[in-house]
Length: 94
Image (cartoon, rainbow, N blue to C red):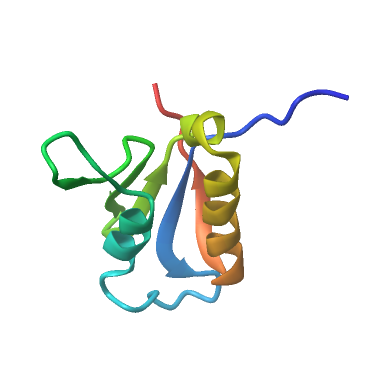
């Protein structure tokens, strides 16, 4: 049995049916769940989960490194995309 291989991916704010995902601040909310207070006593997004845009749509970039830090957080992100029927694409990060 081989170990699980986590992959980088992008959650795009478009459903599989082609509708724009709402609410409009979903990326900030999702990334906020994965954020933490830093040494400056300020909230900071995880370096593994970042909001952005892809082809004009709001999205969340998920780095597979989050799996090594917290596998349940990685599973949460995968399940969020699946449960909301959002478009997910590979992210071949270099």
